[in-house]
Amino acid sequence: MEFRFDLPERRLHIRTPFPMAREPRVFAPDELFRFGIEEEYFLSDSETFAAPTETPDALFHSADCCTTGRIGREFLQAQIEVATEPHCNVNEAGLELWHLRQSAASAAAEHDLAILACGTHPLALWCDSVQSPKDRYSQIMDDLQMVGHRDMLCGTHIHVEFPDPLRRVDVMTRMLPYVPLFIALSTSSPFWQGRKTGLKGYRLAAYDELPRTGLPELFRGFSDYDAYVDAMMRSGAIPDASHLWWAIRPSLKYPTLELRAPDCCTRLDDTIAIATLYRVLARFLYTHPEHNAGINVVDRAIAVENKWRAQRYGAQRHLCNEIRRCHSWRPARSHSGIDRDGCRSSHLPRAIGTVPRDHFGGHFGRRPIAYFW
Image (cartoon, rainbow, N blue to C red; front, side, top):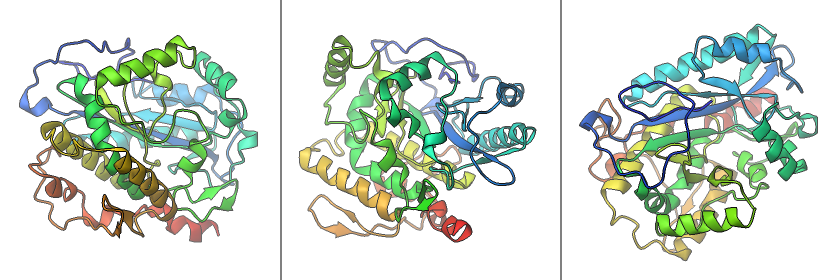
């Protein structure tokens, strides 16, 4: 399923690729930096929690009938995906996502299945996975082979719309030092192949087996990015930019910068908190082009290390800073930096302070270990 950032309607539509050369459009104040959320869940037997190898089309038809295209299949048959409409208001986004989770769970229950919102399935074996029936998925599986079957992973993708979509690559590059933060806050994948991995977030360790994953390179603008995509397409490596599976990327189909790093969060409140933080931080970087303007290869290398530390420890340990020492981080106590639309921020510390303190920490990365072990 796909959603469209389109005025005046706030509906989901099948749409054509977003034209990169499109002129920036004029936004009303309450339309700035709209955001949408995609979540992937596992389907599991409601009694044993085992992941099914195949799932009936009737399940997805039932889930879709009252959600106008917002629930559908994912890459593997043991997965289901939901996508919200574009939103300006955080509370409205949370209500819609709650409704989508309920609709997916209700449709699954009709077939004696349940949904699990987490980054890796505690019990599933990748060798039993079966690809979902879709031409695009068949092409990807043919390319990835066994690596594709190992993609038994569920994430959260957050889209933020920019007034000028041509600035997305610049913001993406300056966002790189913060990507590990979103990983640390979302860790919900301590298991793999029925085993405890010792990592708070194992999902990205498995996902990085795929090509064109991890943190993007230091593109300085759309000209660099377009040159890279053009070279990849001309060489036949990829059919289009949707096959760039980085932790953060400019969306090919929407005028958005898409954060793809977080695990699927078990708690709905965690998803909304992380989406709010990402939206505010994206707005801050867009309106403050000088921030992180001097990012270099050392900064990116430190971000790569912090990505690993976030996967290993979640929010429980330290991250490295730009002077190559480790430091701990704590969310600000004040919530005064955000209005009800979740997008008022005059400086970075206030932006960081918009997420409630008790949301930090990757809940599934800790508590279900005691449940399953």
